[in-house]
Structures are given as C-alpha cells and as structure tokens.
Length: 173
Image 1 (tube, one colour):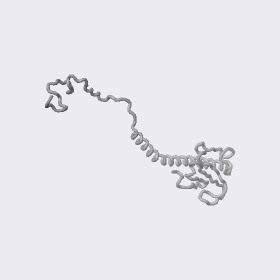
Image 2: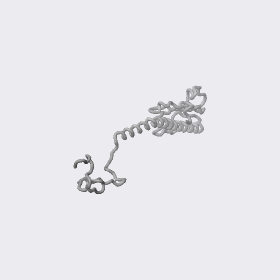
Image 3: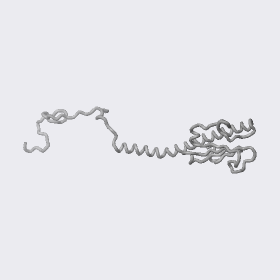
Image 4: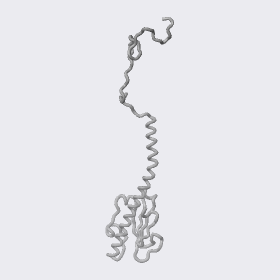
C-alpha cells in the first residue's frame, strides 16, 4: 500500500459501530450507566488528615468553654448548699436560741450531695470574723466553702449571718 499515510485506515475497509475495522477483535467498551459504582472506595490520607485537624480545632475551642461552665455550675451548687445551711441556721436560732457549728447529724442535719462534696468542704464558725473581716458580735455564724480538686482554681466562698457574700463577683453568676 504505497502512498498511504501511517495510521490511516485503508480505503474500502468496512467499519462497524465505533469506527473499528470490521475484522477487528477489539470491541469498544460500553459506557457505564450513571450512578454505577466501581467498587468499595475508602478515604484518602488527605481526607483523614483534614478530618482529624478539624476535630482537633473544635476540641481546642470547646474545651476551655466547657471547663469554665463546669466551674460555674459547681460554684452555684456550692452556693445553694451554703444557702441551705444559712436557712437551717435561722430555723435553729428560733428554736434553740443559739446557732450551731455542726452541719451534719446532731446539728443542722444537712449533708452535701456527692458532686458538691467532691468540689467543696464546708465549715461553720460561730466566733471570729465575718466574711468582710469585721468581728462577729453577738450571735452569728460564718459559713465557708473551701474549694478542692479542680474547683480550687475558682476560689473559696463565704456567707455569714449578716448576709455578706464573698467574693461578690462569684455569687449569683
């Protein structure tokens, strides 16, 4: 076949369907229907790294907020227990004409719940100074909640019979 170009089809050759010579054993590939899957496909390493990095960023932002919320909730629970002690003290002074320094049985009959006891130790003093540092005169009491464990970073609380509450920035927040 002199004079034909390389790669050109000889003239007079019949083709079928996809432009292949009639005698060719190679068949054209059929198109896949849309939505057909090739097989199971996993995640690439880049996708995994992006996912892990995103989770790490979210945790680093959320964890400090969660910690501060937990400190505030624990403080509020401690304050509520201190107010329960103060209310009970007011009942005792009416009944017995004296305050008591005993929080548990034989005194006020109160006990902190497990989560409150895990964060604070409570004490009642009948003499000494009030929460502001002034001397207690006459019948009075001072309730102190000493923060322990993770709550120690939040600080201690004080409530006295004159309704002084320190630190004032912590109460009711």
